[in-house]
Length: 80
Image 1: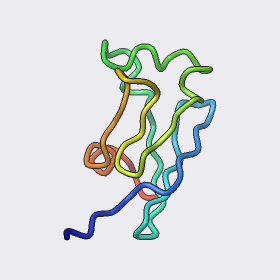
Image 2: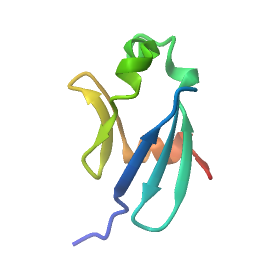
Image 3: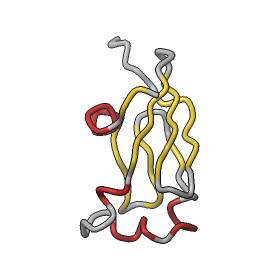
Image 4: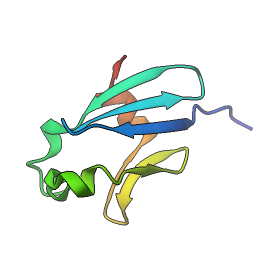
């Protein structure tokens, strides 16, 4: 079985950023500000909705229509 990095924790912040802890001990900072004007993520500009983020170890999500897979997170996030 392939050993894949997993999301262990996601902490949202009111500045539309996420602190993400991965199973390989990396800590990432993902700013979602750049995505807020795109149709796919526009709903995230509601801070209450944004702060409700969850994860299932392979993606972060807010509801069935708003999510981001770990591969996308790794592409867009910076090491914290």
